[in-house]
Image 1: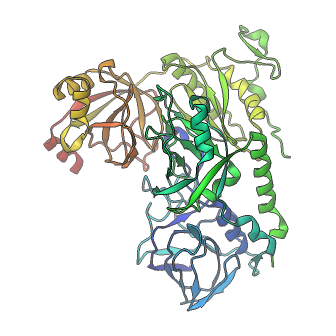
Image 2: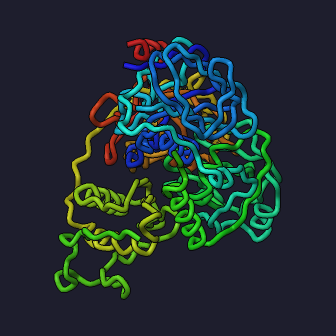
Image 3: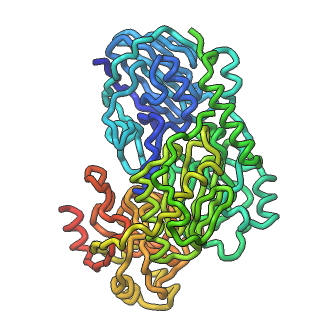
Amino acid sequence: MNTIRILKPGACTTVQDLGRPGFGPMGISPSGAADPVSLRIGNRLVGNPENAAALEMTLSGGHFLFSGTTAIAVTGADFSATLRGTRIPSYTSIAVDPGKVLEFGWTANVARCYLCVQGGIDVPEFLGSRSTHLLSGNGGYQGRELRKGDVLNVGPPPSNSRPRQLSGQGHANLVPRKVFRVTEGPQWSMFSESARRSFFGQTYRVSEVADRTGIRLDGQPLELSAGSDMLTEGVALGAIQIPRDGKPIILFVEQQTTGGYPKIANVIAADLFRVGQLRTGDEIHFESVSLETARSLLLRLEAYLSSPELIRE
Amino acid sequence: MQRETDSPDQLCIAPAQRGLRYTFAAMNVELLPNIRFQPASDQSLLVHFGQEISLETHREIVSFLKLLDANPLRGIVNLHPAYCSVLVRFDALHFTHAEIEQQLAPYLGRLHEFGEPKPRLREISVCYGGDHGADLAEVASLHAISVEEVIRIHCSAEYFVYFLGFVPGFAYLGGLPRELETPRLPSPRKKVPAGSVAIGGNQTGVYPISTPGGWRLIGQTPIKLFRPESEEKSFLAIGDRVRFLPISAQKFDELAAA
């Protein structure tokens, strides 16, 4: 069996697939790749099912030793990957020979880089998924970030493993955005006209508190109407809640499943993968769209991701 | 576009068989008058069962979950139950909010088919105050009562698990005595120790794992609440009755080491 030995882990490297939805009644959030679009494309490049488990690296990458012949694809953020000292391109399947070391550096643009390996990372499933739920210490590799010396098994390679790369137009859709489109949150009506104007009018800065559970934003605090302690209710992925200090928190893949802070807005499904690429210090703002627009943007993203022209051999 | 074809016909009961209370003309299915839908995001909606915490509303939510568990809908991806609502995450590629509402309507017309469940009693040992409950003194001073009085009141009540949420195995407990109701912290803590027993507004609960959290910490239990290796995954289940028992710091250490 092929293995990958972790020579250096990187800042926060975990095993992720597309997550485990369906356990909300037990308080378990789905987890999964913070940028599922990069994961899906990476898996397609090496001939894997889109849901195969891969390594998600955050801000800085690791050094990995491959035991056998395989193919890999690097997607998402540019971490200046080198294979035996030679720079390798992202969004292209690359053959790897036994004993070779793949090294990643620091982020050159956005937050998260994915290393997809032919056959996928083979860790035991937890509740039907191989994704790591860091918060509760479950799933993935021993429920935690990877450390030096860890050895990961790689699954059997898929039958069709010809070299592939992302088509030229593909990259244009993946450039980072500063504008995040949102729909109204369930407590939209609890916010005053001036709070809503402030929310859409200002530029927010991603704070130091930004991880897989949520992203806190720095900016002008929003005024909350009196009596903003509300009854706890289920919260959606990408919900933008406003705690009493008035500074928004975007709930993310390892989110709390329920919460009691009012939600002014919700990032649309088509923009969620970009939330996974936010870094501390990034400046963003929000733009309001209707549910209909959000849906057509999701359909467009999905059409793009599933188009045969996206990947060429 | 792909459409749902296997609608849950077995759940549709002809209006004549039931006391007609309310009819959505477009849906041709009766809903209870207290039920309201609200979009939460472009891929989820909230089903509101009422405005205030009550056992009746709670039973309706449990029935709704049971019905969906017995007859799953293909377009539904996840459910987040709470006191008076259930957040329904759906497959937004193939369904609109209106289509999901239409599919849920027959389930919402059958909520009173289940009998009353028999609750089990769970006891949770708690070491109050000190390092185990950083906000106990502040909670006491906010209510102008002694720390001992807070502990006495918190242990005197019997609580009820309305639902699990927030993080794996976290139980939202109803039954907090009025005199202990305390507003949440102005901004959530970045780390709350695992096992912390806390009060937030008129709610109380135990943090099963170390997480960010906005409730006020009054104590800590050595009991492991999230049990991923077990069948139930959690020490507490929806509908359980709960009592808190005060223990010393020494006893806490003994139980935590066991």
